[in-house]
Figure (cartoon, rainbow over the protein chains, first blue to last red):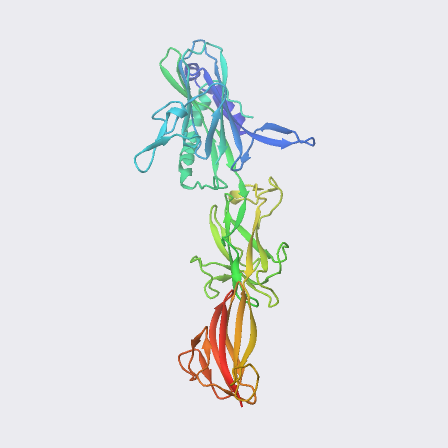
Length: 154
Length: 333
């Protein structure tokens, strides 16, 4: 019911606002459930969960689409890690990550984290606070794409 | 599955609520434990995209996905005794120490029980009580809480531990080096079972409770080892007659040697050797020795005394593996 209401309001929204943001970003989270069948083979199922427990492996899927008539330049997608989720790698398109709340960005292997004694240690997946994809080329009108990263419920 | 409609209006509508959710998410680390995200909390994910399609840089948010974190039921039990706890035959209030830890992510009560007839040991200790430590780590029946199943089950927060004392009596029939194993079992009161078993609506925060990898119960063994000692006395006599021979004739001197041998891993306390002077013989004054050293006949600071009818040497506590040799002399009347 609420969803229908949202759609109604969206349809009634001013036309300019619509035209200004003709890029859509759709966010889905799946949980990997591993089941073992009678033959002892493991199957990995992706389910759309409502509830999770610590240790569950999550797959974050971001679908983007440039529905406008113009190419979208300087296209950057940023996803702050939910604090209860530990980063666990990404899909075929590796993102830049930040381990300091989005101030510095880089490959995980190149980043360090300050220690209490003033020294710095190499960053771990658990340190990741944000993931980001920054596209070098404009996204042509009508183009779509999918970005994936994984996490584990702390 | 939520499909985000194309266009910004929906996202603009969502923005106030999604930023509120992000604030909630930022507050989570205060509650986060090593055991996991606290049951009942919400994981919120929102991505954003920025781009320039000729009208300047614009930013849009994605839809927000909210996941509720359910309660995971997990517990571990670990013995705190690095090696067997020494006990003695018929020893009472013999204490084994365990730590019960809530490794789940919600507050949970745990039922405790013991198994004394585990097998793989020599005897079954008699459990006399389970006590919940008052926090000092030392067993004291006056200050620690006697556990009664179902009435004062320890309630533990995520990552919290309770120290548990299992108190037992050792049967009097055990032998030296016998071992007695006791298992302490802790089980989540919400329920136990195969990992993944779900108890709908029984989790903290109103969600479900899900059995974790431990099966929501845990156990560990502690063991007692009996330390006992036995005493063996061997008495011998050597006769020396006044003529240089060894005939037991009047006037001959008899030297008695009593050897006490203590065997076993324990020790004996209050060990005393007493021997009556045989009839038709007279005690030779000042003749008691212990380990070759003379002892006085008076009942005084040294270990030996003679009271007119018997000699006595009080050896006190003697550990297993040691011997004590006492000699005294009599003359045949």
